[in-house]
Amino acid sequence: MDGLALVLFLAVLVEKVVEIFKDIVYAIPFFPDKFKPLTLEVLSLACGLVLAFQSDINALELLNLKISNPMVGIGITGLVIGKGANFAHDFFHSFGKNKKTVDR
Image (cartoon, rainbow, N blue to C red):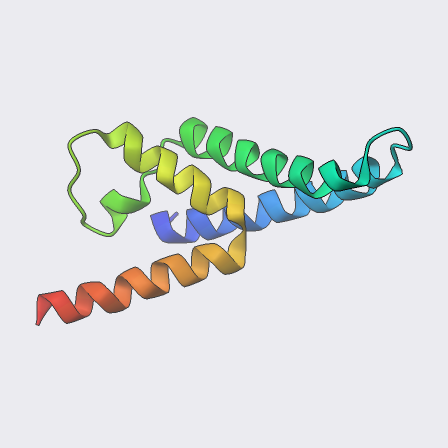
C-alpha cells in the first residue's frame, strides 16, 4: 500500500474509533463535562501515535524530507494520524504544494 494512502487510512480508522468511544465517554455520569472533549482528543492522539509506531510509517520520509532521527518523523506522523483524516489531507496537501514550489 502506498505510504500516504496508509496514513489517510489510519487517520480515518482513528476517527471511527474515537467516534465509537465518544458515546461511551459522554455517557459516564460522574466525569466532568469540561474534561470529556480533552479525553477524546488525548485518546485520538494516543491511537494515532500507537498506530504510527506499530506500522513504522514516517510521513516526513514519504515527503522526501530528511531528518536525523526517524523516530521524530514517526511521532509527527502519529500526531497527524491522531488529528484525523481532514487534518492528514490538509497536512499532505500543504506540504505537497510547498515541495512543488521549492523544486522549481
